[in-house]
Length: 320
Ligand code: TXA
Ligand code: MG
Image (cartoon, rainbow, N blue to C red; front, side, top):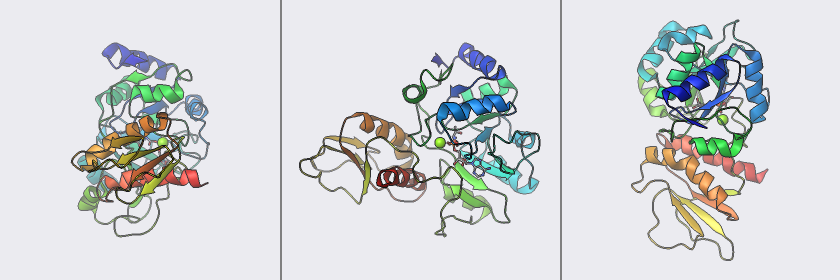
């Protein structure tokens, strides 16, 4: 692990250019990156994460116009979205360019692209002089890491370098929308609130007013799962008797409810703060040795959509 100083970043750049993989911070979560034009390097990402080859990666660029290096598409629409939301937690799915190796997109004719806003991510991509393919830096199906320590817990010893840039300011993965059809479609709610996107380009398919489920190949039910069974609860109910259960509450409970451990997502009920704390709170509760984690539902507006999406998947993993 190296601090993301200019020397640390330089070391990461060298490794990427040599075809190795490196964990690095973005504003959403930590990514596990490789040169997207080097198929062997990209194959290493899948091996390290134990990720199935059918689950495509996101390509990260460092300039608003650089999507052209890996994708094609409707200039007008892309321009509106990238001028308004890049750099930031918005991923666009576009028709892929021939030159991009198929392993990056799991053989799909489309590619997911985003320009992160984290200065370390941008410096790494610029230094490497190539777009970087990167999934979240966790083992497949497990909790996404929002700190270098959380990356080390899952991937330590498997990769040559973790660049430590501190805690990720957004805390949940990017929002993914597909521009492959007539009307843009929401594939994954994430760090950019749906309402903001709809405010600029109008209603999305699978968006606020639609009951459809997102369709990203990686949107499998058992994703974002802690080891400890997780259950969603409505409001603040008392702990069950005789079992050691942790509570992940949205806001502070007014009384002692008898839980073994309590984590609060936001003192003031702020969804942005809750998203920022979500994964690290789950990591801590997962390590606390309780039998179950009970999680209070949060309102499904703004970043609350991304939070509930992750929590439902984590809870579903238990039922299987
Ligand atoms: O914030 C983020 O998006 C983080 C940081 C590191 O940038 N990355 C991330 O990557 O969350 P990952 O691999 O954990 O999730 C990428 C998602 C998967 O659900 C994958 O199926 C979807 O993007 N995806 C990638 N390419 C796609 C494509 N061509 N069509 C549809 N979905 C795609
Ligand atoms: Mg992931």
